[in-house]
Amino acid sequence: MQIGNYYIFTYGCQMNVHESEKLAGILEERGYVHCEKPEDADVLVYNTCCIREGAEQRAVGNIGNAKPIKKKNPNLIVAVCGCMTQQKNVANNLKKKFPFINIVFGANNVEFFGEYLDLFLKQRKYQNKILEDKNYQSNTRSVNIVRDDKYSAYVNITYGCNNFCTYCIVPYVRGREISRPAEEIYKEVKDLIEIGHYKIITLLGQNVNSYGNDLKDNKVTFPKLLEHIANFDGDFEIRFMSSHPKDLSDELIDVIARNKKISKAIHLPVQSGSNNVLKLMNRNYTREKYLDIIKKMKEKIPNLSLSTDIIVGFVGETEQDFQDTVNLIKEVKFSNAYIFMYSKRKGTVAEKMEGHLPLEVKRERIHKLLEIQKEITNNHFVNLIGTIQENVFVEDEKQTFYLGKTQCGKVVKIKKDKQLDSGSFYSVKITDYSGGNLYGEAL
Ligand code: SAH
Ligand code: SF4
Ligand code: F3S
Image: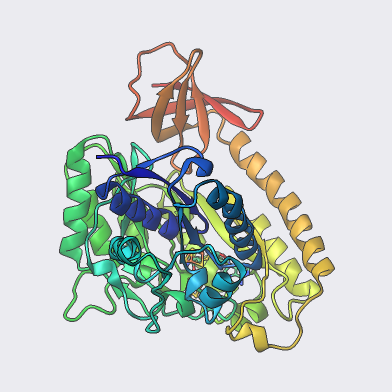
């Protein structure tokens, strides 16, 4: 029975996207139905992120937009959750600023949203369910999941993070790293493959390479977990994110190289090309070690497509440090780089460091780096002309072409000279690159 509509705003990373799928599952179990516009909702959920100031501002701005919706529909229930609410005092401040908020909870008790909603409906009073213990994780509790995509599915392998990169808020809001038992992961992946239409499985963790370190008597390392899954029957591709360079082993490179079902699009955040900055960031690897990993991957993995994350304008970053980053991206030639301006986060080690840079310097550096990367990305795709791309996933049939995606997520418009099926993988010869799209012919 339909008892109302729901709409979820999701900010932040894949982890949050997946948690919103759990929130949707919980709501649908209770009879709520997804609606296309927030104005039509009876339950509005804001699943927030606090990785940078901008992410917080976007969420706060949108929560403000709920006020007129609530005016029109006094029964509207407004819930706020996610990483932002886990920070000290944020929930109380939000409630003060937006008195119409009905329920707040955190990133570590998403799976209990159903109970909180029931409590609110029963008592009709504000529910503040932020848990003091950041290490508490309700993720061991399995809930109904309503997945966003027909073909692609997320599977958690670890929660939380132990790395404490000095700029980063995640370890504070998500608590310590917890790995899911391998058997549980295998079962979820097998069940997804058996459903038939899920073809791209993405394993999620803040640092997948440290999978299993916290499990007692655990013999399943990340490369072992990955290879075990790659040996499952069925037509699917397996991806993972994120990988921390400090824990990336030679074994993992070999496993990626020898398993056809493991995606060759690897995301390996470098953050900076300068050893001084990497040290200040507490990243625990050097520029040389990073470049050594890249060299090995390029040698061993055919059709490799590398992407990365970079922070510009970190505390104390000199012009020379920045140049080191410029030189690194020119040397590695990432197919894509997600470049961010350093954003000061409360409670982190970097917040208290000396030498924060003015906004103008950060802006200037991000513009420079974006320009350089744009050209590298462009050249990367031009260089694909004439190559054969394996595992191009056909998502849709359009009037004049098939819409395919390469392993790194790049759109390929495939010629309609053969009958191809949506939801299947094909080898595609790339014939052109223009207007930001690849063009190709299925083999
Ligand atoms: N756990 C993942 C990434 C988490 S956050 C990993 O380590 O790879 C995603 C990206 O946001 C990071 O890789 C980093 O580049 C960026 N980021 C994190 N904290 C930031 C901050 N305070 N300011 C700017 N960018 C930040
Ligand atoms: Fe943040 Fe570093 Fe953990 Fe990634 S590895 S979530 S950047 S602390
Ligand atoms: Fe944001 Fe939390 Fe992800 S801070 S980037 S949603 S882990």
